[in-house]
Image 1 (cartoon, rainbow, N blue to C red):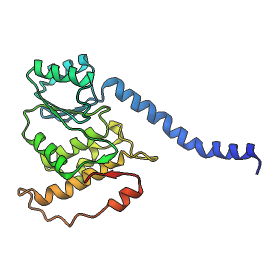
Image 2: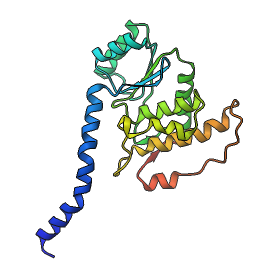
Image 3: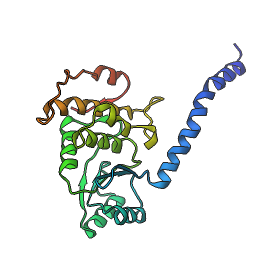
Length: 216
């Protein structure tokens, strides 16, 4: 087959991907411009990307944020220093977790996040960089551990509405797996949960084959 024909076939095959990628990229860009700010539970929990100082100040004044949970780590960076200084100046508790959107955090880390969200002074703001993946996981953890929602309900926090896009080879599907693992283990160990839960599956082989990394 001649090279021009091969190129034509390749271009035709790529058209559906391009058709999907263009609006997806546009929406993701829009979310970043507006800060990807959303309410998880009014007066209790809010989620966002990393906000500009002006936007963060406006959100704190509007919703009375008492605790900020940073999920992206990046301790010592300029934005982190500025945000932590802002929190200290406004008597806002500041908590750091260093999550990676492409890696499943340990159950211990997810349990620590759950306990923070259960016990921290509210309203709480959780954020990562974009507010889509790591923040979606934390919001889902909140819905399960604090609100008593099911995994199926909590999974709504990891949706394209918030910019979460775990398809086309994206390793951010690790956050979906992590939430499922948390739901299995949290409900089994939580003494206030009476419903029987089947043994957790072992999805590691599937995750590894999909390029999703796990943490010990």
